[in-house]
Amino acid sequence: MPGMQRRARPLLGTLVEIGVPHGSAGAAVEAAFSAVQRVQERMSRFVPGSDVARFAALPVGRSLAIAPETADVLQAAAALQAASGGLFDITQGRAPHGWHCAGRRLHKRAAMAAFDLGGIAKGYAVDCAVQALQRGGCASGWVNAGGDLRAFGAIEVPVLLRDEATGGLRPFARLGDGAFATSHLGAGRRSQAWAGGRGVQAHASVAAPLCLWADALTKVVATSGDARHPVLAHYGAQAWLHCDNAPA
Image 1 (cartoon, rainbow, N blue to C red):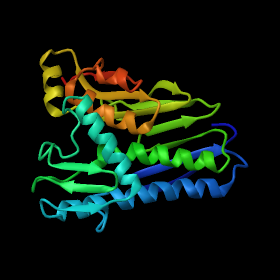
Image 2 (image 1 turned 180 degrees about the vertical axis):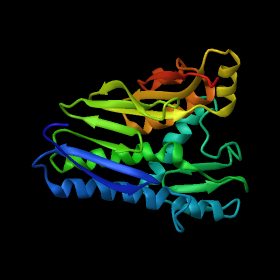
Image 3 (image 1 turned 135 degrees about the vertical axis):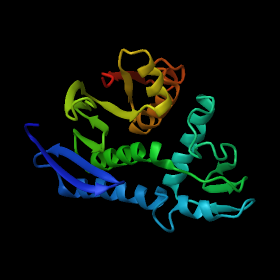
């Protein structure tokens, strides 16, 4: 985009790109990448010593102290689990009620309780990066973590969606001050769409004020197949289901 400079680094299992106006302080961009790195170190189940890894190894009935960032995400996940009637579940069905977060203490109530925060922490990391840019004096810009996108200030960022039929990208919208994320529908939902013979609903997208909510709510829409799910209005979000052509 004219007048903008881009920086990118591999983080969160994807490429994180940051765009800010030319002349913006490099320290702000570094702080934004550091914020994403902190989320990865605390919430990735693949990082030994992360809060998520330590909880997985925790005996049932015990608790542990977690980072403020992890507590923020877990409290948001608990709220969304309740609001969605259990459609959003960071335990992936293993033990949805087998954990409890109170302040910065995380309690393990069931031996099977373990987390995969990939459906919410990436969006949270994007929000943290945006906050770091704003604290560093950036009046506008964007952060994109593998399709979890948030823009802020007087800027519009093109939103592109993958076309599964061609393997390319196609324009979808322009994002102003807000967030946007996309997830694949589950195999069952795709099969139901194919059965109709008119194509397949392959992706669910959500726009929301925060990337944490956009990221997490795509999972609710993808699981339910409902772009008008009542939980969307609770978070000021809007959703779309994208159909690709079925194979011949």
